[in-house]
Length: 274
Ligand code: IPD
Image (cartoon, rainbow, N blue to C red; front, side):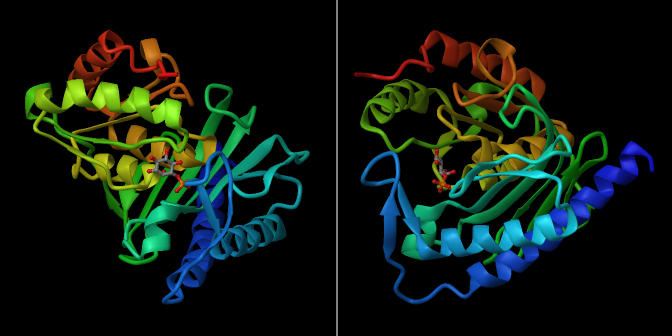
């Protein structure tokens, strides 16, 4: 079987699992409560995060029992095939908690080390259970929204750019992010903080944002969305033009990417404030 056929099959498996999880997540109860917290008291987990991840992992391993899984809630379960599924059952958990319809199921499959920079993302799928939009991409095979090919964000000057970003959950990180944001805000068209990195990257791929940057994204926040953005034609990097990573993810059309990355470097965007 060719590599392209493999990627298409892996994508089909991802979409199947995301669709099942999306159906579960769509049944959001009127009152959602916090089941536990992670990196800080505002970094929450709901019962639905755990239930959706369990369902996704069952679905993936039923089809690909030798693969590993790296899940936001369950951590790393190593496999033997060299492929790892990177799963965020609900990216945008705080939106889910409050009933704001901007959260997503994000599933990608990677080869190599299960961490940004060490992996090659082969296929990815981001599904918004509320709007039922499904973004998909395969490495070298383009990106699609509901089956329609995406052509990525437009080239605009930084001062005309609508820029998406997000914030971490830990105070020192947020202070640093606030410092960068305060400098950047007067220099761009406007800023959006939608609350789901996966949806931000897909919005960029769909031309709904001109640029996106964020410091502190976890592997599951970025795996599928970065592939969708890259395959739509965006340039996506980390600091210094290296691979996107937890340090920093910067995404835009190539010339805007260069100017935003330069500005973020000047603003020392990879520095947290004690
Ligand atoms: C979060 C969202 C948010 C981003 C945070 C992420 P979660 O993921 O993607 O937009 O700003 O950095 O942690 O916690 O909702 O899965």
